Amino acid sequence: MKSIFDFIIQPLGDEYNNEIKVKNKSLIINTKIESYKSVNNLAIVIEVPKAYDTPIKKGDIIVVHHNVFRTFYDIKGVRKKSRSWFKDNLYFCQIDQVYLYKTSNEWKSFGDRCFIMPLKNNNSLTLDKEQKLIGILKIGNSSLEALKINPGDIVGYKPYGEWDFLIDGQRLYCMKSNDIVIKYEYKGNEEEYNPSWASGSKRVNQSC
Image (cartoon, rainbow, N blue to C red):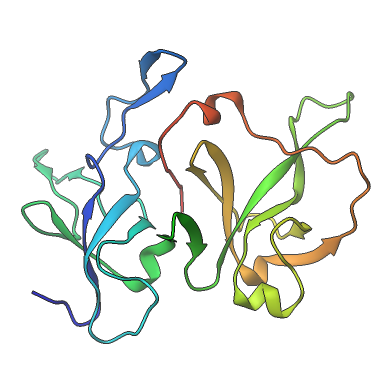
């Protein structure tokens, strides 16, 4: 059982993550299947595509696009599985729907994706809690490394290219390499901004 162009995967857990843990309590955050923010994005690789040679192997954990496991209602109001559904608990996943994979207990970007954590806004004259279009590179890729932009660097990025994920209790912005436009020098007062609700969540979400 192998696909030529797609990964065959199954969700790690359920298709939706509708609860978050806050201290010792569980909170229901979603009761509607229309909400993409509660769709599970973690998957286990069952088979890799035959047409591509990738670093992703069978059994790896990957982060995928929210539409892979997303269910919907058709025009008759009947609940349907995702269009990526194959059979039982198995789904097809296109190669451009994969954003991260885990190897040796470490997340690595896939393709030209990278992940940024925003910086805390210390300006007392605004209600914005994070600075706009600037953050710390958390997960880079080979394209950025060739430009000497590495994890831990402060970078500026284009507007509207970032998509938010929750990964291991951190809210990170996913974007492409060419969305990074500048590398900044540290001033010494930079502080990462991670919302309090994110650190208590086990979900991995994204909105792209």
